[in-house]
Image: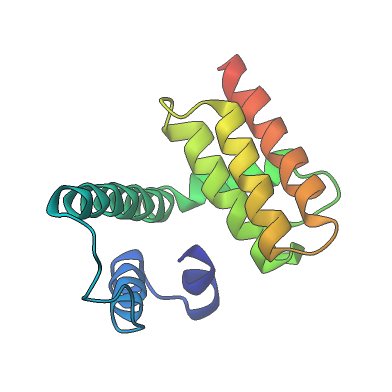
Length: 144
């Protein structure tokens, strides 16, 4: 969602609505699943938690984007934020928000998830770059 916001300039609420509506119209599970009601309810609860977490990340970054982007700039050696690949920049933004404002998420979990996103959506150098920037942010936030 942050990538969409970065490309389009849309605000968080519009982007969140657009993202989830596009998923709901793209298909999904079949209606003749042989799962019992309790399994379906449990899956729905998990999906709801995941959606709420994703929405919180997007809203949180949007509310604090100046602070987070300034923090990224302060630890990025030889890289201006505007010159970073969009994918890398937005993965770093998500991770930075988690590191700075979601203290209940362990630092190593944030770093691992960010690196996995970078492996999946970035280029060959993305995982190391994302890890390096977020590690510096994590170190700085641990000192504060």
